[in-house]
Image 1 (cartoon, helix red, strand yellow):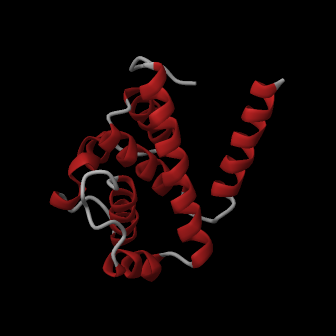
Image 2 (cartoon, rainbow, N blue to C red; image 1 turned 90 degrees about the vertical axis):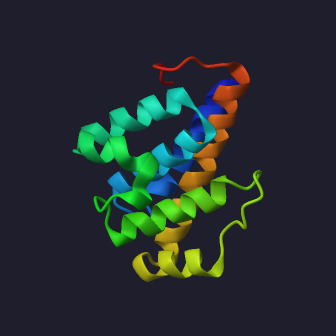
Image 3 (cartoon, rainbow, N blue to C red; image 1 turned 45 degrees about the vertical axis):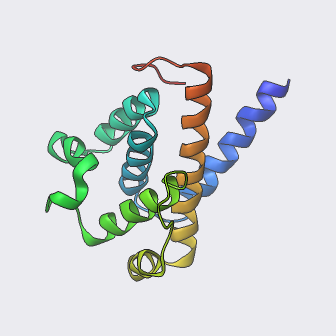
Length: 142
């Protein structure tokens, strides 16, 4: 019964994330970038699959890891990816979410959307850590 409760809770979080009004493709890019940073191969695998189903191009998917060095991403996507990196890289001495990063996100997303992105970052990091702990192999999805 506990596993059913856990799944129900996760479903509620996913509904809340998607109710925020953020383009689902942006949410997938956020998921993919956090998963790349954390080295979570099952989440990278599922993120690429989900983004592809939403119409993402292979060219952009191959460059998410280097989004700063390519003109392929919009300013809004760049703001979401910067927020993702700042919120995910908390263990390696990065300054976290600076005022500049927050202001860039706020220039493209309203409060509800920003908190949707933040919740998406948090749940991605949550799953990345679970997959790392249980040694979930790459190429698998939940």
